Image (cartoon, rainbow, N blue to C red; front, side, top):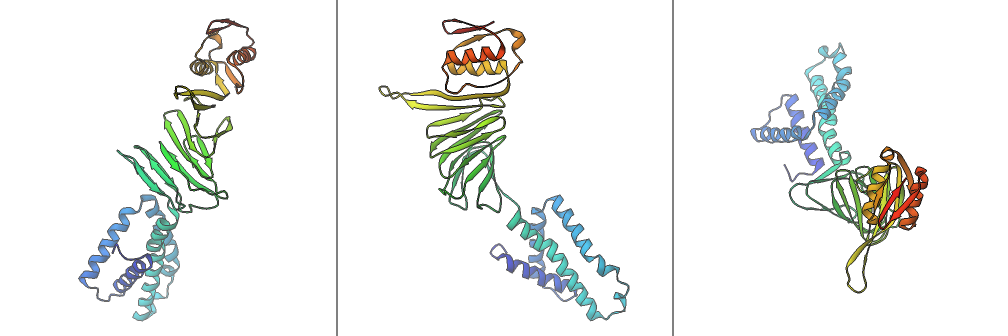
Length: 314
């Protein structure tokens, strides 16, 4: 049975079903094969789809059962009637099942305890990290190649200038034409690491970020926050140092803004407690540490006093 093609399976089941409803003899081997097929189909059907199929079948058969003249016809007509009924049932159950699973139901890939390699129809390669899930619609690839990711994965996208590749993650999306990148999602923390090519990262409440190789997009685990970090090698020691290229907040509490600034600039910020939950909207891209803290103080209506690496807002 596993080696039969779709059309052959459908024809095989139809022939057996037709003989069963017309009371023609079916061999034990045929009964066994039909039983195996039925068990396999019902095992893969979810409850919602089975209920929906039954309703469609009953609706389609209603005109035949409502007729008052069926009882006056000969056995030959009854055989034709059962064949029609079998065909309708086959259309909505057998055919519907295969059409649904072959052409409509999305493919889901899981990585449980180890990495899983997935090769998509366009030649793109996805390495799913443990605990992650990738969903790919049957329509993939179309003009726009779209997949959905839960968890973490490394993507090597087949190049195509005409067909963008979009990964919808949890709360943000990454758009590319052909490149190598990694998406990491841990709780509220979201990051995109770019190794080759270019990507555009879209995140609610933040401007679209365009990454180049050896750059990372992150939200630092804070909603409506976005930053781009560059990782560059020091010429003499060859050590890699992070550099904050852009940083924006959209309606983010002061205490969370201060947390991000302190961590990335290596400074301390002291401010009145009553400002802790005040919402801040600001773009600190391009400014020095002093300039950005001055801008923050201006937004809050405060003044800045600096003592070494500590900024006091009052």
